[in-house]
Length: 115
Length: 114
Image (tube, rainbow over all chains, first blue to last red; front, side, top):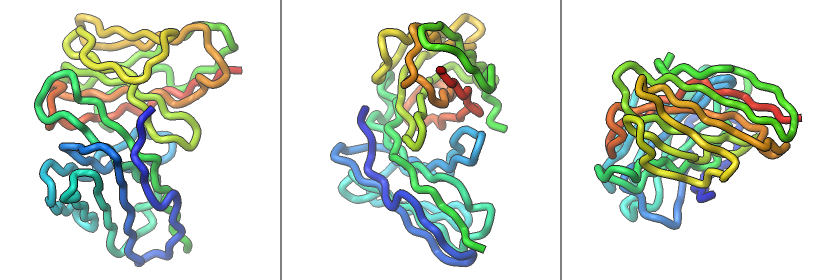
């Protein structure tokens, strides 16, 4: 199935460091989403982006919707132990048209914080 | 807690068997989505239902089928199971199944096919 290219695949950082990850696609998306998944849990929505060029923050998290509509970036500042998990980007082609609401997910970035 | 419930949490079965996974959406949500997450893979969209009707289909195998009932809960049926079907299966729900709706994910069902 179609997937987004997400990088890096994994990151090992020290507490307090900043984190950057990105997602690219060959297709245009009208919505970009960033999810976090912890072991044994389903993905939880962190940030949603609806407009090309949009920059949105959620606490220490900042995400941007690329101008080309084919990429998105997520930054985490001053990482803390609870940031550990797998981060997924997801794109949605539809805007408000029914029947095209599926999300296409990236392959994930596994974040590990080294004590 | 997203408000989406999935049962069972774990399921172990043998090749060739058939299983049913169940999902209850958040209260008031009309749309249900099913996703498959294989080991070290991202989530693959399988199918979406809205108010009992199929709305969108992904790369769902013919051996798999789903339905959404009048009380809005949904079931994913997997038959003639193969080893490669071992995965986490997530259900998500959203209010209307429209473009800007947030999809809330359940905790998943881990299926192991031996």
